[in-house]
Length: 386
Image (tube, helix red, strand yellow):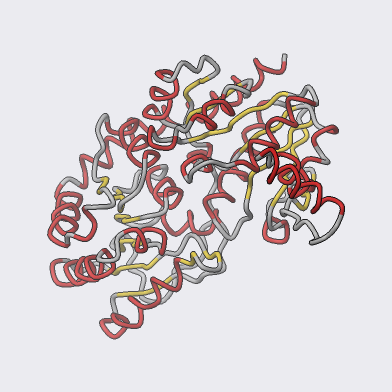
């Protein structure tokens, strides 16, 4: 059986890498005849994932101005408001591989959280035209993301695997009967433990991840996070390890975190992890932290899956749903509006420290179940293709 993952932008987003890497592992572990391929927007960034059976260039093509395709697509758009021809040409690097596959997995996770996705819609239609199985793999979608076009697209899927219960319940309430509940595959991802950097306190280091994505949505959050770092330095003896997890141009955690590092490095208790580690190496560091504070979902998953008490900074349905499935409540998840309030950040951190042992015990109780739910995705996939 040939399985191809698509809608992957590249592994400079270590969360996207974590999804592809862990999905490949659990599929091959359970489906012994499976060959797993990846279509990537940046295939050069994915070479460390050696268990894949092939990596294809899935970058979007530009339609050359004044070419036949340009005139034809312009005609269709202007006269009929029909973008389908244009998007199929632009996504040709992905579409050309569909005919050679048995199952197509749309793996972006939260690709449907950013408005309508007409390019993806055309790929999905092409998959069904070719008579192939189409699966939305480990998704999170908010109620606010559900346009009519999105709902129509989701109806095309043979199987939708929601990675947390808030998305699952919302999609069921929309009348979709092709939805199953699982967990994010990255809960099962392995880790690689590198040497500790200078300044790391073994058993007494708190990780901090912050992102331009969150900062741009709440401009005042940067100052509040600075105050949180000050609070940690003044009320504990812990080292703060600034931890990037996405290093994409224009959306680079390292650039934001390095500003904090330059400001606080003379304290001797603030360090920054390098920007060139892969997902399993970052997980290796996060797993050995005492606490973790993170804006990037897969950085927090790296912490949760190793029973590290975790505080989440201002994110979407996925963070709320994952926390709810772990704790039975949205434990230590601060909404985007809250993270500019330094008092709320400090209070949440103090709560995490105060309840350290209870949180660790709860994670020890629930993480094995969540990992089993990650594997359920492969069970559902297996049932679909039998």
